[in-house]
Image (tube, rainbow, N blue to C red):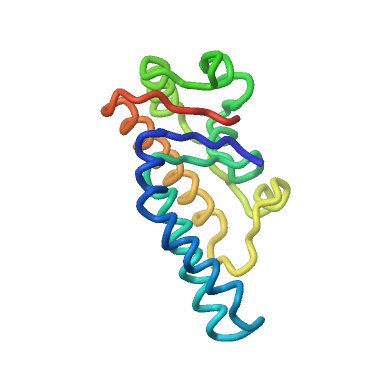
Length: 162
């Protein structure tokens, strides 16, 4: 579960552009033999076109330890929920307001591996979990600001499912 935000104009364009290839590779994957190289290849194509459908006009923040809002000390329900109109849209004006809040609010970064473990952040296979997770949160915050900037620049509302 998580907050899914859409700049509908952009997201619909990406979906329209990639849905045919996505569906085509799904069909090929579904008829390929289980555990075969062909099936794995087709699944990689399915994943590629799925990602392309959401590469612009979409932002997701999970309701778990990977949440950038949580690291900003904000809540999708309590803080952002009251900014959304009756049609679940964040207007351009409210997007500006949210952008300012996000840009000026410092992230609470992880200080130790123990803290990450307590927050159920996966650390398996990481060389420096604290740095890697903190880099992830910094990048996610910048991605969110970029997402908000794009909606503001296009003067498009953001549909929010949170």
